[in-house]
Length: 572
Ligand code: GLC
Ligand code: CA
Image (cartoon, rainbow, N blue to C red; front, side):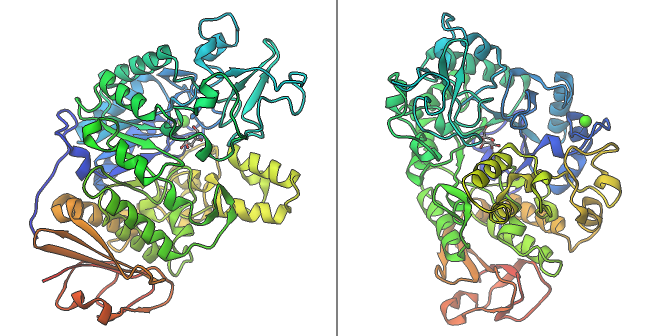
């Protein structure tokens, strides 16, 4: 195989550098505590940079560390240009940036600008109807014929993601404001050019500080439907993001931001989180000629084990739907645009528990095979903290063990709406965001080495066997497999750029595909099942004479894959 070494030099950031990068997401609150208060912090992250360099990733994405009342763990920001004391200081952040850059690691900040916190000075000022900032948010009158502030008087029946209503009554002015996540997260009015300028200024300030890009929180929600922006409530009650996502001015706002901040000119990595967006939107937004974003996070593959618009209504995942969906995006962005690749993040249950098999017998193999499949797609892979260890969902069985605002709101509404406690707990056990937020398991000691104090969120008891210390010294660990996958991408252009083709699309256990660049062809075959599976040789004639590049198991049968075994093969 041709070996094209790549190295990321954040200082120079060559054009398109993010195409060969692997990104590691840090959820700071749960990564590493340095001062014993039980909450992860910036000095904690800095102390673990050597571990991340050892893993081999190129970029760190930090979930929000800005000043915040922490209604949604930092996704409710009250000061964009300061660090919350929970996490440290701006000096700590500068230190982290410098130490990361010294190791060749780029740093991407979370950018949460669809909404602010209700404690942000902009919103505090906006509460006064006479203030010039009134129009920076969406303020509306009560529904005609209703007494403001009484039940049912909300301007329309839209639900918030983490609260019963998207409208919150403000007694001082007698009006309601829009917060499509929670009352603590009022939506900014992007129609107002002053809002956009303020966001651009803030972004330039971060770029000057040395950050290498932005992960843009729910960025396809910034342009709201015409009905709302024309001064009225929403036409139809909105629930789920489809009703408000991808508004008419989205491309305009993104292109303007790119131009004003110099995102492409400075070769920054920009990834837009886009719930409710389609391939068509992604094709547009990531078309390099349009200068909007370098890549987006789709949700389509995350929505296949839930009912449409309701992730809590569980639907068994069918492998063909998952692999066909990823293939659709591979094909759709093959010629223009770029994919981001993820199975795990801070909003999703752990992939090994969700798509793999987290039983002691199959956890390691299934974590490796899920990684093999994902990292051999074309795009920029994202590793979420702990994924490289095969960390699992937490054993949560009662509502008082849940901490997340979304979990608690769902429990309250669903039980009030008549669902049984058992059904609600079953949905939470499958889908709660709490699973991703348990502290990183560093070692088998007290609190897994995450803190010397009391952790803000209980450590998963399985840290006695699943932890970084054990994994780093075990060549057969999930961690070691991630290292190999990352190296394979760095060293082989066919992994980065090769054309993707899905094979056996209807097979319900095997995930098979090729990657082709000039005369090089890689074949990936993965058994996504907890029993041995025969490879249908007549449907995969390619296999003949292929050489193993990387596998999850020691030499096995040429025609049968062990449970959760996967192989990356080079065709002759
Ligand atoms: C994004 C974040 C999520 C947050 C929400 C509101 O989906 O990833 O954690 O709750 O936006 O900011
Ligand atoms: Ca701390």
